[in-house]
Amino acid sequence: MLRRLGEIPPTAGLPLQAADLLPRGDALTLRLAAQLGVPPLQLTCSGTAALLITLSTLSELAPGRNVVVVPAYTCPLVAIAVHRLGLRLRLCDTRPGHWDLDPHRLAALCDERTLALVPTHLAGLVADVETPLAMARACGAFVIEDAAQALGARDGAHSVGLRGDAGFFSLAAGKGLSIYEGGLLVAREEALREALSATARRDERAGCRQELRRSLELVMLAALYRPLGLRLAYGVPLRRALRRRDPVTAVGDVFPPEIPFHRVGRWRRGVGTRAASRLPAFLSANRARARARIARLRELPGVIAFDETSGTTGSWPFLMLRMPDAERATAVLARLWGSGLGVSRLFAHALPDYAYLADRIPQTPMPHAADFAARTLTITNSPWLDDTAFEHIVDVIAHTLG
Ligand SMILES: *Cc1c(COP(=O)(O)O)cnc(C)c1O
Image 1 (tube, rainbow, N blue to C red):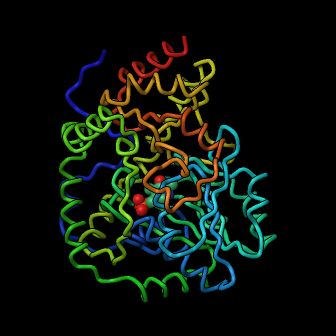
Image 2 (image 1 turned 60 degrees about the horizontal axis):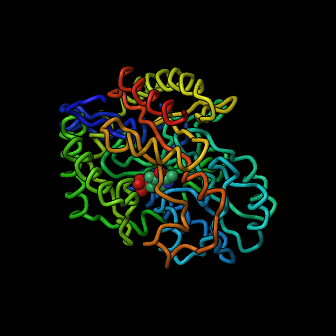
């Protein structure tokens, strides 16, 4: 068994440097838009806030529509945001063994009440947007690409987020580039971009207290986002949750009902600006490491290691594995989840199975999503996971397969 002092984070976040924290002019959205090759980006205080802005803008454009269709396997914040606006949440089961929206289920959810479909680029891999887009066009609904986990992922020659009507990225801690909490909105059409900015100007608060708090949290993130600090900030609470058999807390899937909604201050924008200059090199190193490791994982019989589909490029925050059955996923996690090596689950459950959200999420069974949640696990793509530690993980999985 490997013994190490530090803790490897479950996703490949870009580590901050001391110099990032020095005051500096703000060019965050300009720099990222240039790197990604996208139209002007709108900065928000979180990915969830970006989704709120998009949904309220779209509901004003289409007043007769109030149904938002989201995948049954996704971040609970997406469901919380839809509920928060008083819109009607409808879950779409995923296609078997995957996180893409199941086209057969989707067809039944598209009608004259449907406001938006939310295909989701999980694990930094490009989801099928074409199918939901065609169905949305046929019924007059919009498509919002949830690219919270996919900053830097490319669909053909373009960034994700541009096929649908709008898309959003997350700048939360652990999601690639981070200003502790933040989000980016992208939209292809200028008219919609203007409407999205107008909504933000109207609804966002200055939020000085929130911003002060986020700034302190960002200083702590810069200080602790390294293996020794993460042992304290991430490893200790993780192992406590695992001892209590509380996977929802272990994954970090417990969210408060209120969604902060304020402007991001100049200092945090400056920190993001400095860190963003290292993002392209960081992503390309992560890609090379991920591709080599995916090839290695594919040698394991019965394990599916999700890879880029043809013509797409992932951003690779972590590697996603589907085990032959739930028992073996649980067995691997029993050995590795608390081991400090960055092995985890992505989400604890399919959306209907979070007890704390039962009053906000339709309790319709979602068999594919539930099966997918039970059979999958993630391996970090953090540069701190060295080859020896990765091989140890591969050995544990191989041993579990028998
Ligand atoms: C993290 C995440 C969000 C929410 O983004 P925040 O910046 O944390 O608000 C939405 N969707 C998915 C798939 C996510 O992983």
